[in-house]
Amino acid sequence: MSDRIIFHIDVNSAYLSWEAAYRLQHGSQTDLRNIPSIVGGDQEKRHGIVLAKSIPAKKFGIITGETIHSAREKCPGLVMVPPNYYRYIMASDAMVNLLKDYSPLIQRYSIDEVFLDYSNMDIPFMDAAGEMSKKIENELGFTVNIGIGPNKLLAKMASDFSKPNKIHTLFHHQLEEKMWNLPVQDLFMVGSRTARKLNGRGIFTIGHLASLDREYIHSWLKKPGLLIWEYANGIENSEVRSGGTPIKSVGNSTTLPFDVETREEAHKVLLAISEMIGMRARDLEMCGWVISVSIKNHLFYSCSHQKKLTAPTDATSTIYKYAALLFDELWDGEPLRHLSISLSQLQSSEFFQISMLEPFDKKNRSLDRTIDSLRSKFGQNSIYRSCFLHSGIDPVIGGVVMEESYPMMSSYL
Image (tube, rainbow, N blue to C red; front, side):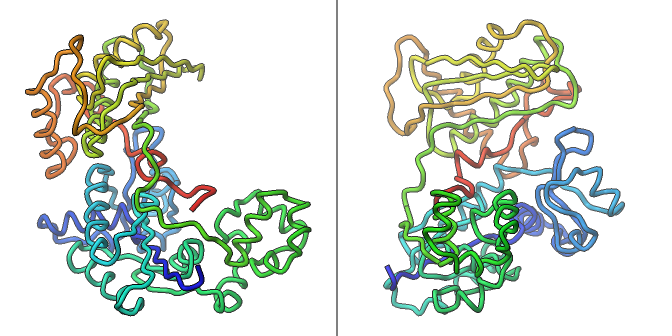
């Protein structure tokens, strides 16, 4: 394991960078990265938050996760653009396809993060990293940080050093110089609660944690403590899993800025969510056997229902059809604030058995894919159903649920 060379490639301010690159490629004269700007939700919606920010916006004290209202109070001239998750998936795919020229072993860790095993390659790793960084910038229009180390943990830690558009190394002989002087909360898997526990016993840096007796940390914090002690000492041996984590489901939800009080309104929301789930399933080239619906009323009481289909589907109309039926069985007439749909028990959509009980609509499948193509090129709201006109309901609802399509940071690398 000691001779492994692992890269962690992390897109700088991914959503904002991808928006900026897309707009510049389509004729915009303004680079969003050079002005105070954010990618975020609708200011009028209660769940509107900052998803990504430019460096000039950061100078105003704007942080990821704060409300749009708060961000605009800090910077009245702030430029805000809505997220386009389908566009981001396409940008992520383009980066991964480019990286395949450097190694067949690539693990998508999240929509904007990739691990790459560069062990035993001919070109020196620093030369290869510089080349891939420039290629991503020149061909795709955005920049990345690249961390290089003997395992995924240290590569990940290295990529989090100074940004943007930087290449950093972190090997075992560099731990004392580059990592051990950092605050303990900067270590992967050390959250705020764990940091407080460590600080309470005088452990303030990663180096302090690394120097503790192994048995002591295990007796105090048990298995999680042993894990972070190993990470503090640069110990991590997981493989770069080129197959990725199996996708179990595709789901989206929305918390509405108003109470849904009629069946007609609820069905429109379900249709808008079905649009996003259908697009995601088709992009993944997967279809699902089980459709689930969950609702939460204005008093935050929730309930759910699901149905196993006679044939797997990725069709928007089929997802909506059964989501609406399940909703009608669930709803007791109470005003609603939250609705969600999930498509699970996924399989490849390349080959599957057609059911005699469920008509196979080849024309609608072709239409779905044509609409996907148009939305990818011109934006999610470039084409939508007329029932959404003047309804106050977005025609496509829901972002990417990262835990499913692109696993986010977790207890494993």
